[in-house]
Image (cartoon, rainbow, N blue to C red; front, side, top):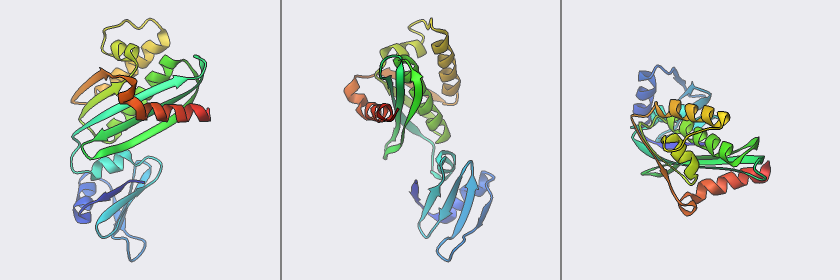
Length: 197
């Protein structure tokens, strides 16, 4: 549940400028509330609390600027193919903005890596970032997306197309292969998901 410390009057104006309907609060403590894209923002004296399963778009409207973020992704499977999971996180100059993990059913390691990258890109897009620097420890996926390796597998080729479609939402992006130690949090999240698969 994101909490944004801000001037709630300015936050209200930002939402109204974006075409979001803002209503009176339900209690004496609530200044106003607004629903948008599957989430609800509730304003108090000096903060806005966002509730709901998909807070990204509402949070992006309330943040002062879109700016730059770093995305880390990792995916894996137990058995290759086998029960698979993904992990990703977004980091800005203020620290970790969001992170996620999920089971994705039965998949190969490479399919899981692509799914993790896609999930990270969707989250970054929903948060409204215009510059994204992506890091992952799968050299194959990084080089396929950058066009340095061919993608012979039809399913991976389809996922690469999806990645490029998502990348087109950003004014600027980079994709870099990093050692597993640099990608440790995304790796932890992917492993947590695989443990639940």
